[in-house]
Amino acid sequence: MKTILELPEIDFRSSEYLKEPLKTLASYAQKFKVGRSKRGVEILDYDLCRETILDRRFGTGHPKLMKVLGMSKGPALSYKKNSISFHDRGETRRRLRIPLTQLMGPSGSERFRIDIKNVVKNTFNGIPKNQNVDLIKHLCDQIPSKVYCYWVNAPQEDAEFVSRTSHIVQQVHTRDPSTAKEVSAGFEALLDYVDKRIEYSRKNLGDDLLSDLIKATDEGYLTPSELRNWVVKLAEANTDNSSHQIAIAIIELSSRPEIWKKLGQDNSLIPQALREVMRYHPRSLSTSRETLENVNLDGYLIPKGEAVFPNIGAAHWNPNYFPEPENFDINRPDKPTHLNFGGGIFSCIGRFAVTIEIEEVIAFMCSHFPNFEITKSAFSHSPMFTSASVLEGNFKTF
Image (cartoon, helix red, strand yellow):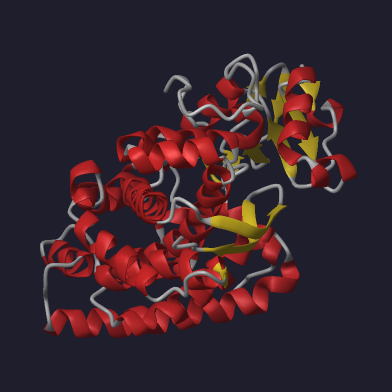
């Protein structure tokens, strides 16, 4: 059996990757299924990615991530250690997921749709028309942070704080030690904010997600500490990721006029169009795992404790699984499915709510602004994420 030192090398800083990351990953995947980079072992094959995401021999990569960042103490590390991010497969992780899985499953998330529709409508009402607008500031950041405010029974004015802080703490995935101080401060601010929201909601229970989680805690499904960690996790994971996914969807769909017009005429096509967006240009280019024991991957011995990254971008652009992957096709079959939201015990709990947010934004835009025009857009790609760094456009009403 070969060692990881014999794996082909992948350079995420190469000019080829920086220019065309998805095509570059796809070209690697045609040559080998498993490679290595400076951050660890890279899995490129669709089946191997899916198997690794589900395989019990692989655990969460967060403990190693915190070590890479140099976070050895403080409230941020304490939160992470006690949140679901640090729990591998087993009874604790399963138990922690139960309340959220019930409240944010397909039917549970649908009850948020009316509130999400209202957030979308009110946000668009406040956006200037017939002039150039920064959509990241006025739309993409606004929607998920305002939805979070609904979830925790907070004033909509808190959305700016939620959005800004979520972007800060998501820097944890850069694996850059220079961000550790800012990330720690961001987590501390979120923890303080959530403590105040929980205290308020305990005295003012309502028909919102936080009130439901408080009731679940009182019934013994969660401890007070676990309740706090979940409410922080919802801000940490939902807001930043949803903002970028909304921006990616706007860019990919509105830049194709025929598809944009078709979606405006028939909103029922939006779910399948979004599946193709997530396949063609995924927000999550990879996800992190750590081997819990020695593992044989495609003939290579991966030792226990090694960082392993299923490369979702490479899997989605593999022509053996997605014929002509460079073609954007909203009529592409559902199978194989995209891997944007993980799978199994590590699947994204908020995936249904996030999808509804994007659906409602696209439905409103293509129905009310068929002549919407992007004036400026740009993506940045790290090994971990696709980010919309610039998105400006004109909501033409004529």
